[in-house]
Amino acid sequence: MRCCVCLFQQSLQCSPSKMAAGESNSRSSCLNLSNSGPLGNAPPSNSAHSSPASNGGTMGAAGGINRSTGNSNPQSGPENGGGAESAVRSTPSAQNPSRQPVGQSGATSGAASNMTATSSSSSSSSSSASTASADASAAVPSLPSSPASVLVYREPVYNWQATKSTVKERFALAVGSAVFDAMFNGGMATTSTEIELPDVEPAAFLALLKFLYSDEVQIGPETVMTTLYTAKKYAVPALEAHCVEFLKKNLRADNAFMLLTQARLFDEPQLASLCLENIDKNTADALAAEGFTDIDLDTLMAVLERDTLGVREVRLFVAAVRWADAEAQRQQLQPTPENKRRVLGKSLSLIRFPLMTIEEFAAGPAQSGILTDREVVSLFLHFTVNPKPHVEFIDRPRCCLRGKECSITRFSQVESRWGYSGTSDRIRFSVNRRIFVVGFGLYGSIHGPTDYQVNIQIIHTDSNTVLGQNDTGFSCDGTASTFRVMFKEPVEILPSVNYIACATLKGPDSHYGTKGMRKVTHEAPATGTKTCFTFCYAAGNNNGTSVEDGQIPEVIFYT
Image (tube, rainbow, N blue to C red; front, side):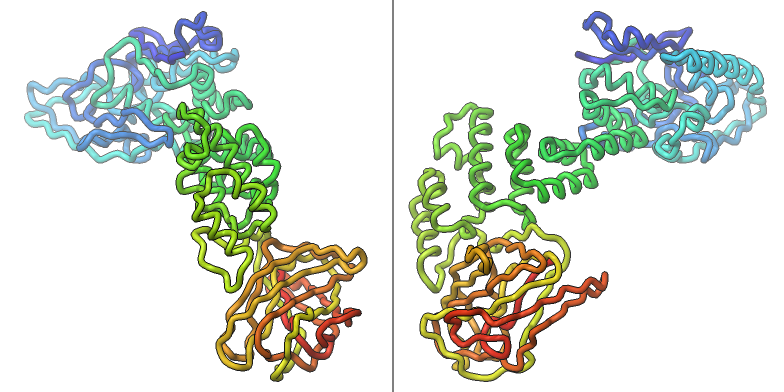
C-alpha cells in the first residue's frame, strides 16, 4: 500500500478516519496543505527569500538524506534569523518577493495552521493557528523602495526541527521535519497536487503526523518497526527515541534475533548491544526461536564471533545448519551439504569445533557432509594426539561471563623437581561464593623449554561427577612461572561445596610449590568483594600434592 501527500490551494486538512481506513485500501493517508506560509505550494521564486536548496531527496533505511551537490541549505528556524536574514535597499523597479522568508511571523504561524487531528482539542488549536496566521500576515509591512537593492542570504542551520522535542516548540517553527521543510519550502519544492510515498505504511505515516502535531505517541508491536523507519526517513529523532524505547522494553530471548537484525538495519547501536547481551545470557532460547532462521548472514557472523555465548559449541553448529537450510530455500537452492556450506560462507570458520568433545564432533559435524574430509581428519587428530596439530578453526574458549578475570596462588615459594608417572595431582577446595573456574596455572619443566601433555578436571567430591575437563597440552619455557591450561567451558562452583582440582601431566620433572596456604582470599579492586578459597587434602592417590606443597598452584576464575 502506498502513502501520498495531497496539496490544495485553499486549506490544510487531514482526515484521520480516511487515513486509518486507508480509503478502502485504494490509497493511503493524505496531508493537505495550503499555500499561505512556508507549507504553501506556491511556485519557487527567484528572490533571495525563496532560494534555499532542496534536501528533500529520498532517505534510506538508516535515515540518511541524499542531497544534490551544491544544493544543501534547507530553510532554517528562528535561531539564525529565520533562515534568510536580508538587508534591503530597494530600486525603482523592486518588487515584493513572491513569498515571505521563513522566520517572518506570518510564515511561522502559517506553517502549522489548518492541521486537523483526531481530537477536538487538536482541531481547535489548528483553527487558532490559522487565525493567527491571517492576523500576522496582515501586519507584515511591504518592502520599501529606494534607488538600489541588495539581498544578503545567510547559510541556515540544517534540521533545526530535530532540536525541538515538544509540539509547542515545533508549532513555533515551519514544520516538525527538516525533510518536509525542504520538500514543501525548498528551492525545488514540488508543484504537484499529490506526492506519492510508496515505501511508507499509512499507519506509520499517521503515527508520524500525530506525533508532529499533537505529541501523541501511537505505536504498538505491529507498527513499531514501520514507524521507526518513517521517523528516520523524515528526520524526527524524538519519535525514533520513543520507538527504540518501546523495543527495549519488549526485548525477550524469543525476539532478540529479529530485533538485532532491525537494529543493525536502522543503525541503532544501543538497541543492537542490548540484543546481543540478551543473546549472550539466553543463547539456547534465542537460537531455538523461529526468528533466528530469518536473520541475514552478517548478523549470524556477528553472533558467532562473540566470545560470550552461553551454549555448548555443538548446539551452535546445529543452529547454524538449521539457518543454512532456511537460507538455501530463500536462494532457491537444494539443501544439500554442499549448498549449506556455500550459504554459510565465512560463518562456518567461526564455529569453534575444537571446543567440542570428540564424541560430540563424531556424532554431528563429522557426519554432516558440510566439512571437507581434510578438515574432519585434522580435527580428529586435534582431539586425539599431543602435541596438538594446527587446525583452521578457532580453539579459544567461549566464556559466557562478564567482568575481569581473577586468579589466586596457593604457594608462597617455588622449588625444583616434581616427577610424574601417570598419577594425577589432586587438591580439594571450596569457596565462600559462587564463581566460575576457567582454568589452572601449572608448573613447567626444570630442564628448559618443553611440551607437556595434560588432562585437567574439576570433580564434584560427593558424587564423584566430572563437571569439566580438557585433554590438551602446554609449552613451558623452563622458568619457575605458571603456565595457563584452560577448560573448554567455565565450570560453575557453588559456595560451601567440596570440589577436587585434578591435573594429570606427562612430561619431564617440573618445578613445584611449597609453603602452601590453607586459606587464600581474593579481593576485587573495584568493588571490594572477597572470594575466599579453602584448600584441603584430597584423599586417595594424588601424586604427593597437598595443601603444603605440590602442583596446581593457581586457579583462574570469574566471579
